[in-house]
Length: 196
Image (cartoon, rainbow, N blue to C red; front, side, top):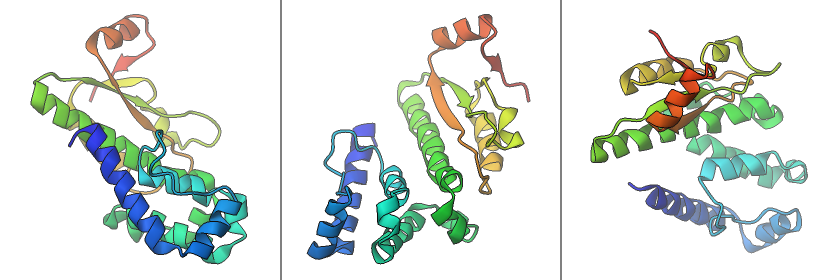
């Protein structure tokens, strides 16, 4: 599936959910607080990211019957093996905790997309594990700062372990680098190759 097909699929799923979950009066209430179905917006990337933005909306939180529908949809979008680990109170009240789930989603989507591309083109890419490091970051994220993985299998092994349980404050991302760019950054000392 191409990235364009993925976005189109995500947009269609989101639109279907939005117009099924809410009646016309509810859609009007949402519109009045600045929430609309963003599926047709040019910058729409994936549904979980859009839903995350909505559950952070303070005005929506005051309309509990509508807010709970967004929370339920967010939970539906999380992989089933993680659902039993969700602390709903933290999901509703802690932005760093809620962000972990969509960061995880984006991390694995990027990894899978690049794996599929490399199978088609026979070109391998280098992966930069890019955590946000600040006072909210878990210690487990720090060891991956500015580390480049050249092996998909080793990266996948580490990613599965890292993302198997929710970690408040984890905002790790995965970036794909071409070899020239990666080598320049390695030579300058900005990045290092992961040694297992």
